[in-house]
Length: 317
Image (cartoon, rainbow, N blue to C red; front, side, top):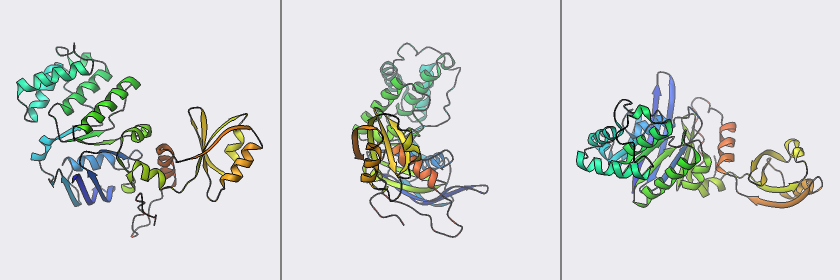
């Protein structure tokens, strides 16, 4: 069963085509990453799932039913533009937010206090939101998103502005919510979080889907060869090598993406002749490298042509 099914959905604002003929399925109980550059159509897609925007064409089903206002009580939404009532007390904000979703005040107070304790905000119940730091406010907003125990969580850039400790805490909570059977859809630019968290991922660019599949399928679908190197010496020559498309630094090593037609043995011989080589390992490309390659190489389709969609596990066309 799919928690969300989007079938050939398009959305235009004035003359801007924000989403174009998008189809995707989000399996129930999965952690699903929606990635793409700024302006790709991610937020528009999430808002159509939430019925904030209505699609111009196509259909959307959420939790087995057409999108409706009634469905919203089963969904928790963390918007990219955070918004809380700044002059209200933290406890009152959380009880109010839960009440909108139909949670009785007594139950909301109990759950809110438990969440505040868990997030390190146990002493903030009686403080005004405006007196909290930005990071603390973000944690309060996240609590308001999950307090009514929704079946579906939609998080738009949830890691934005969080320090590493709070990023790890949020990641752990997302994994725990998935274990409880909840479905989580989140957009992000942090590709390392995609690799750590996601069961499946979809990338959109210019409003069109360009990748869709498990992380393993996506990493294996590019056809690019990537080699991890560790060596002593100056590796500047790699930047101008005709065998190399790009290089990227990784902890304790350099990852090299080979140019089209380049042979790994030719690269091995070239590197070994210039530096003292201690590691030469063929690896799958990272989600970061795939993201960069897809964005840099994407061209707008000519008017009247079908969009080019590369679905993981299937050949490109």
